[in-house]
Image 1 (cartoon, rainbow, N blue to C red):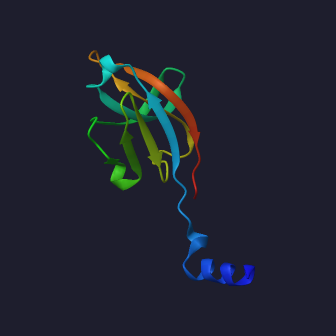
Image 2 (spheres, rainbow, N blue to C red):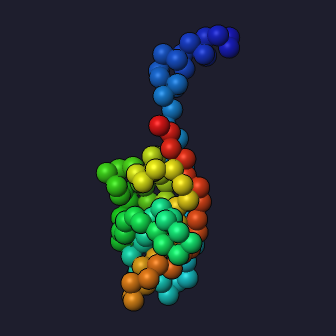
Amino acid sequence: MYFIILVFLLAIGENDAVFWQRLKCPYEPKHQSLLRVWCRQRSAECCTGLTFSHSSQLADGGKVRVTQDTHSFTVEVLEPSHREGVYWCGLLSKNGTIIKLAEGYFYSCK
């Protein structure tokens, strides 16, 4: 029986499984209208990446998916664009600084 399941999984390409890494980013209700930030940490105080609106669902050519909850958003990454490393999710404040909400290490599959 297990042999049949294994053959079936190999036949449908299960060995090419997609692995989405995710990070949940909670924020205060007063920050709901701010742009979202997804970036790779360059130093303790700096990161490089992209911004997107609260209504965005895809970013970075479809490699980044975003889902919005009541007071948080979740970023799911298929493959980090700027190599593996520590990534931040945050909000872009009115004065242009990043309000860091969470960070996590994201791995490259290559």
